[in-house]
Image (tube, rainbow, N blue to C red; front, side, top):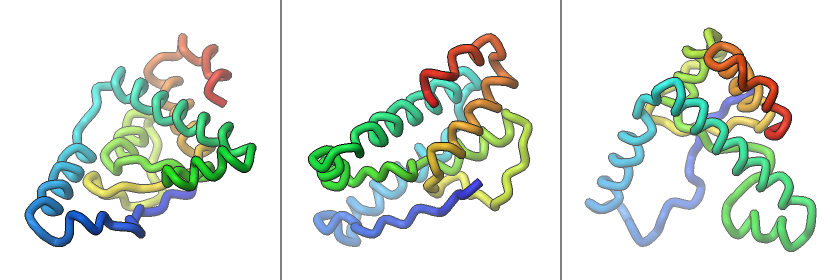
Length: 136
């Protein structure tokens, strides 16, 4: 498992250090620490995996790699809120090898997020495991 804390290398220069930047950071922290119901945790993780799969597929041609770079999307890691990661570990009955903070954001490889999702589905909805192939 390779989880890294996300640090924005390109902060928004238009926001500066003023009130708007503080409000935006506060809203981001609030949303990143929100709790999901078990069903919504599955749905949110599926959506992240589908988006990441599109980014990976799009990274096969020069123009698509350029589009990924322009959009700030990286095919090797996906951005996940700390609260979501903590819930993924807790609900799938696993221990996290890292100390995670709910209101921080982290990057994680697609394969690691998929493995967490697979274990989550095995715990919460074993009948869905036959459909896991379309995300891998």
